[in-house]
Image 1 (spheres, rainbow, N blue to C red):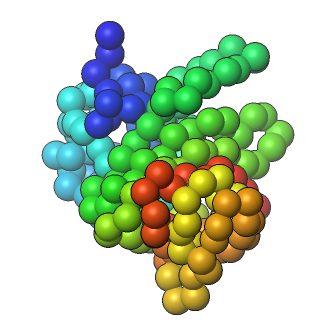
Image 2: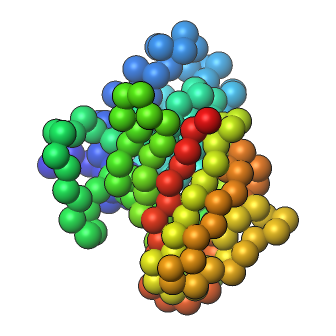
Length: 188
């Protein structure tokens, strides 16, 4: 069995994807690390499959590479896809009890990814801006959460929907145990 990032996305998938996308962008290790604001040694470890990236590190690299998050964490899948509860490539936040599971990546010709977001009360997940033009959509499935732009989040209950720009600082703060929802990241 392949090692995983915090028991989630396979490290070999992340390593292969980062090398592929860095080469596609024509960037050196040094330049990509600088653009993402991470140490060159960290990037080198990730590309060799020995690092253990947080969701923040992967997002920073995706922003620097101008690629969707899913392109880095998801292995190739068959056309018919079922992801059982508790499965799927998952990455955990560094400073919050927060997990992001990729459910569906952007297929050819489309510009969206679908995630299952889980959080527990405590420290909120504060997200730096993603690539320019990203819009995030969320339907809260269980619990209660504050979601949206950091300067104006909205409290959501199960069944509530929110849409907000993902290219500004934003927040997901679980207010009850067992809080989770489905998020769609739309790339415009």
